[in-house]
Length: 227
Image 1 (cartoon, one colour):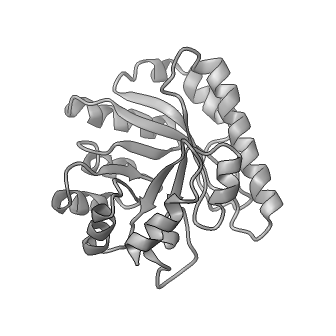
Image 2 (cartoon, one colour; image 1 turned 60 degrees about the vertical axis):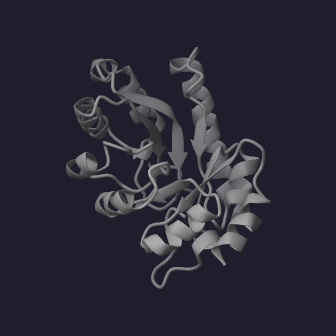
């Protein structure tokens, strides 16, 4: 069913929107099936799980880290990660830069914003983001590159609230692009939208949608988070 699910999802994507297949907790066999169906972007939220999958799956996979990233786990993904969606502090960004230096890489990152009503979600507010970007410490980081923003909407059936939160994130993106990233065409990514709300996210300007359930089916536990 994975091949069919991917085809169905791809048929709904707006122009310029890329699909991140959220493969956390899924066995490598399922990822391989998605790969064989043409999927190349995969999203994981556990550093060690992502490392283990990276070691056995095809080398041209573009690995995106989408979960809350602990500083002591950065070293496990720094050699190969394509994009980190979840930068929520200067300290974390400094650690990513340090590990990137060790591997002679520049690692692309997204600033994660807290746009939901739930306090349990991680992320910056606008003042914190400005403080990070204005800090002298940030200007010293040559092995990380901020290429956009990420956010998760409230887990709610209230689609008006979800739309409002995505619209807010796009507004933040525009403000930061105008203030800090003029002349930086790489600052172009808006990672927002999961299986239950990605249609709204695309209407509000998302360039990366993170879908797991729509591709791999429902997980056996919990409420979908970040897919």
